Image (cartoon, rainbow, N blue to C red):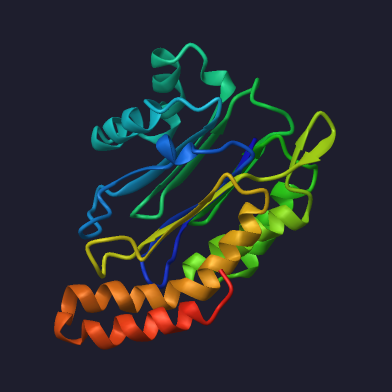
Length: 244
């Protein structure tokens, strides 16, 4: 009951993921990241295990990456550790831009994935056009900010039908957007909407209204604390003037 886009920006080196699902409180188990803060490290990666997600598989993936295993070896290694692998979907994007996806035969239908240059989209419990719309939108967004590109890709999936259960559309209750660029010791973007019947739409509102403002807010606290009072006052006045 989830659709996801993961990618690396070739221009900036940023790496990120956007997820939406009919489940709630899923940030407990996905995505799993390593080597992205406080700086982007050579072994950095994002792994997402969904459908009937196994939260141990991302940690196994990090072990395999450290061992220099090829993606061709991942499925066999996962299967040796997980007898229910065919119920899972797994996506991986690394700091170097390598991507890999797996969709088990017994994942929720409709299911599938596309793997392109530096990105992947994957999902299950979907309408027939959801993944194709996501693929087209991500590929047409070359050159745009990575967070915007990821979020627009989720929105395209939503507009194309989003999630289905037994032939009927179902709402997304959770949405998250994370991007790491190595410029600060925290993510460039780290937002989530949970337990909300309009999760994707709410994420767009949050991103448009808050991202640029809070980016300045936290960077000022970190690098220019002597200027923080004026920055905080300006942000609070802006937010107070909008309907939350």
